[in-house]
Image: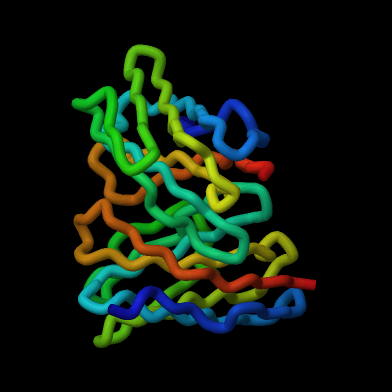
Length: 112
Length: 113
């Protein structure tokens, strides 16, 4: 069936580096995408979203890029900090659904 | 503004038993969704309640059931527990049933032995 997945399960970076977390999706009907951050012992926390009529959206230190041609989503974190260490999930709300379908997640480890 | 709260934090049950998990939605939100998150996986949608009625269900068996109360708090009930039910159970509240916004609670860690 349709699914959302991530290329890399773990990403290790140095403090101050830029981080890029990638996500592939297969549901061509998906029209809304979200990135969540989940810290240990906590529920997922919304970071940034993007609709399918956009290819880039920027927030504070974060940028989401959407490439609909290859069904690829990425999250860029600028000047990564130790507090950014967490598991990051991309999620899609395909075909008008308001329920997000989550991928497996990428663990980001930031070394001071 | 009070965020989403869940109770208990941790729970250990034996296979075959029944469990009830509780969730209080964020102030002003009338929609609650429940998710199951196995270790190392993303959350999987169980069901959603909107104004005390089930408003969508994922691929979970009928032994997973729920309730929503007039104050919009919610319960998740799981009967005949199986070992594979061990997971983090997350509750998320939304302002309405047709909103992309989901605010997650910290979850309840259920261990079935």
